[in-house]
Amino acid sequence: MAVPIAAAIRSKYPDAEIHWAVEPYCSPVIDTERLVNDIVLFPRDEWEKNRWSPRTWRDQLGTYTRMRGRKFDIGIDLQGQAKTALCLRFAKPKKRIAVKSHDFISAKLNPVLEVSRGQMHTIEHSMMALQRLEEFPKEIRFLMPELPAEQESIRGKIDRQRPLATISVSAGGKKKIYALDHWGTVAEGLLNNGFQVAFLGGKNDPCPPVEHAMNWVGELSLREAMAAVKLSAVHLAADTGTGHFAAAYNVPVVSVFGRTKPYWYRPYTTNGVVLDGKGSTENITPEQVIEAVGSLTRSKSGAFSS
Image 1 (tube, rainbow, N blue to C red):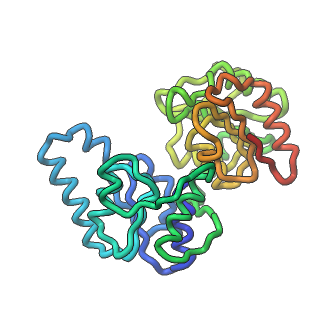
Image 2 (tube, rainbow, N blue to C red; image 1 turned 30 degrees about the vertical axis):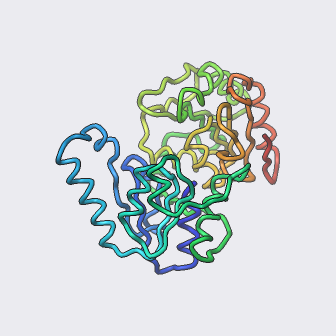
C-alpha cells in the first residue's frame, strides 16, 4: 500500500534518488529496477531481540547517521510508529511529514497530517500527506517487481491449460484468519468448477488436506509467492499482504474481512470483491466465497462490494 506514494514521486521526478527504509523480510516486495534506487534495511526483529546490547545501539545509530548523510529533499513516514518517526527525524530531509502518529514520541518528532481518515482508504490518506509536501501526480499506480525468473519457476509447477486459483491461508493476526476447514471447502468448490488450486502461506501455517490441490505453504520465497499471485486467474485471501499483491498486479481478488475495516485496508482495486464479516470472518460461509469468485470471474469489468 506504500508503493503508489513512491510511484507518484518517481512520476514527477524520473531522475530522483528514492530511498526506502524497510524491514528485511519485506524488502523483496519493492521494485529496485524502476521504483527505488536503494533499500535501507532496518532489522527491527534483530534489534528488539538484542535491545540491551551495545552493538545494537551502535548499529542503530550508524543506520540513522547514514540516513542523514544522504541529504534528502523530502521524506514521508507512512506508519507513524516511534521507530519510523525516529528514522524520518534522523534523516533530516528539507521537508518532511508523517501520515499519522500512534504514540507521544511519533507525534512530537515530525509534522503530522492533521486530517481524519474517516472512511478514506489508507492509500488515499497517504497520498494526501504527500500532497502537503508539494504537488505530485494524484493518479494511484503500482510499480511492482516483474519477476521473470520466479514466474517461469511457477509455470513449471502448474497446468497452463487450466485457470489457477491461489488461496492464502495466512493472515496478519489470529483474529483475521479465515478458518482452515472453510478454505478447504472453498478449494474443493473451485476444483469442481474447473480451477487448479494452490495454497500459499508461511512456514508455520497449516494447509487444508484437499485432494488434487497443490500445497505450496512454506515452500515458496516471498518473490515466488508474488509470482504465483501474478499468474493467478483469481486470488483469495483474508486481510493479508497477498491480497494487496493481487491488487497491485491487477489480478482478480476475493478478500475475506472480519475484524478490520475494509474501507481502510481492502486491496485497492476495482477488480475485486470484499466479503465483510462485520467483526468476524466466521460470519462468512465458504459458499459465499465460492459465489464471489464466480461473480468476479464472470464479470468483464470486475466488481467491488462490501
